[in-house]
Each structure stands twice: as structure tokens, then as C-alpha cells.
Amino acid sequence: MAFFVSAMTANGQETSLVGIYQGSELTAAANRLGQGGYELSGGTKVSFDKWYHSKWIDMRFEMLTQLSDDFGLLWGASTGQRAEKVRIDPGVKLGFILQKRPTPSTTLSLTVSSILGGNLTERPCTADFGAVGGFHTVNCRLAASQLRPSDTLKYMTNLEPSRWKLDLRFRGEF
Image 1 (cartoon, rainbow, N blue to C red):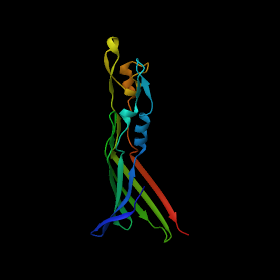
Image 2: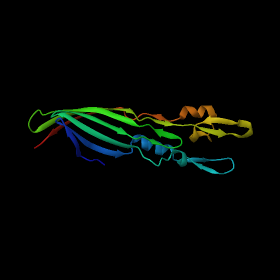
Image 3: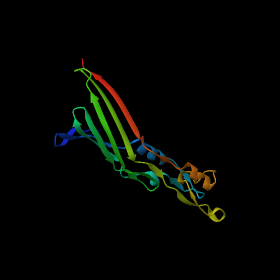
Image 4: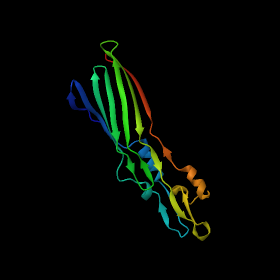
């Protein structure tokens, strides 16, 4: 969902709300981590959903501060989201838009932006492998696999958002 609303004007600079968004590619990745489960030795089913489901979905807003007719600063932030075994950190978006009009009916624009922060990290579990195996730190999703407990930690998910966005557009009116 996106809104285009003028927020404020000061010293000839106008700041506008470009959009408000909920969810991202990292939200989708966190949701995929919560799919599935395993069965304990006694037959009890353990669902990953309770560990990876977040009640709050990452929310982002983006603003544009127009500094001249052809140049503006993009900026914004995200709230992040958290569940018991996965976290998306809050982030900050910074960038600019440069626009030129080669002819009165055409526009060439360049948008460059970057996201700082916003990483997804998965947290481990402590698993009890009984009297023989003892307690070990493991990847929650692989605790019941055939891997040695210490080897499951290699498969912990750590993702970054798409850090850079470059958008070049040419628009002509007929």
C-alpha cells in the first residue's frame, strides 16, 4: 500500500510521504522458517510456528524531501519484527532522486537508495538428547535431524535485506 501525501513544507523544501509498507522479503523468509516441525521420541509433535511466528510484522515508511525541482532526498525507517527464534532488526533507508527533462515531454530519473540495518538472524535452541547425549545448543529446525548437534549450527539463517537499489527510468508523454 502506498500513500502520496504532502507532509510539511519549510524553507521551500517539501517533505512527502512516499509510502507505508508492511512485510518484506525478510518477513517472507522468517515465515518460511516457521513451516514444518518434528516429532519427539515420545511421539509429541513440535511445530516451528510457535518459535518463528511474530505478532508484529515489519513496518516501513518512506519519505521524500524535495530540495530542488530536480533533486530530492529519500529517507525512511522500518520497525523490524521479533519472534522467539528469529529477529529482523530495525533499519534505516537513505537515498536520493535526480531528475532531468531532456525535452518538455520526457523525463529521465535516477533513484539510488540503501538500507542500513534490517538484518534477519535466527537464534539457536538448547536440546536435551537424554542421558546419553546430554544438552546441546542446536539449530531448532534441525535438532531432530541426523546431523551432529554442533553441525546443525552451520545452517542457522542470517540474511541481509537487499542493500542497494538503483532505478533508472525514462518516461515520455505522447
